[in-house]
Image 1: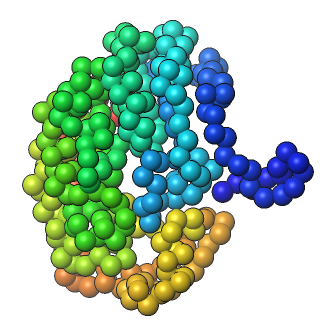
Image 2: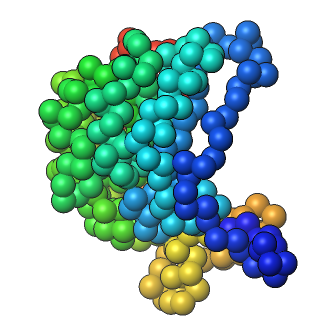
Length: 304
């Protein structure tokens, strides 16, 4: 959270800007486009995340994530048209934490994207809600592909439902599986983020995660596997401070404010069985990451 003086001169954190339609469109005219193979315009439709409670996530406690706020669908579409004409491009990367946070914005993109930017291709990140499709059902994904969507990123995080529930991730592995298969049928490339070493994760959880990836190798194009890091902002550290006995495997927690992290050790990760399970997980990740990318998504490789 950024602290600065309020308009009345007092200290503390300013209230987040609510009317995002007031923000001028960025001008990338001075960007050195000639140094890049593709002119990919970054766009953001909303600040924060419509879910916003994952215990590990520092994004939702940053200045961009304090509460969820969204631009209007028409304002987003207007910028798409402006940027497409100004920079003579039809490639867009949406940088929202969860592009389907506001359903009318998501559906507006699907209906109107190529009207505003003919021949548009675009990518973004979504949250696969455990209880409802929220714009990610098979019919919507097929329509999104026709509107130029070529790649989605989603936070799988773990192949263990128990670990996901501990993270307060709000996802269900069976629903995510259906989404992955529906996206593949729609010819949309999918990449997933994952976390290894989340406190409470056991050898059995790591094996479940490896098995989940093995079972979905054909419908996942890329995996970004991250080692769990205790951040100073997210709720995990507050929960640990309140009841460290609830995390018996976590020890030597030491805050490093200049890096906004807390170093720690996770005792179960030191065992041989855990290490062997991790090796199986890494093999599954490598197998996926060696796959040939969906040809429609290649031009966005290296972005996000």
